[in-house]
Length: 147
Image (cartoon, rainbow, N blue to C red):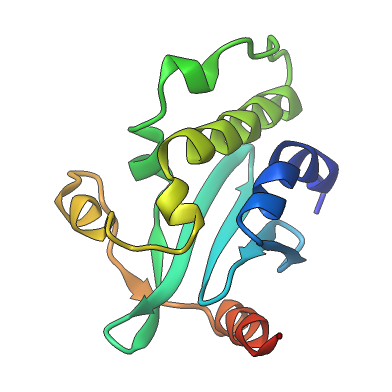
């Protein structure tokens, strides 16, 4: 992943605090794997996407949470951002805001809790909850087997 060092820099304390494992998924995607859930961060064509995968109704589901989470981010999450002059600079800022915003507004989500799902379903820009990608499910299941 081209932005691995940036992601690890901004998310390292989150990985440690919430016991999340960093895994490369594709050239453009990485996963933060918890026990029973995962965040998948994708960077493609200068845009950042974030999905959450968890067990819902006895099946792993993938939920596009980027817009939902961003709607909760505050000026506190966006303060003191470096001025972006390039696409890479803008992606760096987006990753920083994402790390701050998740930590400041979605601690229960970072722990794998799903009580936010009802709010998500009422969110006007909510996407369709889809069947999870097999690769992500396998990473989650492997993590759950760890002692």
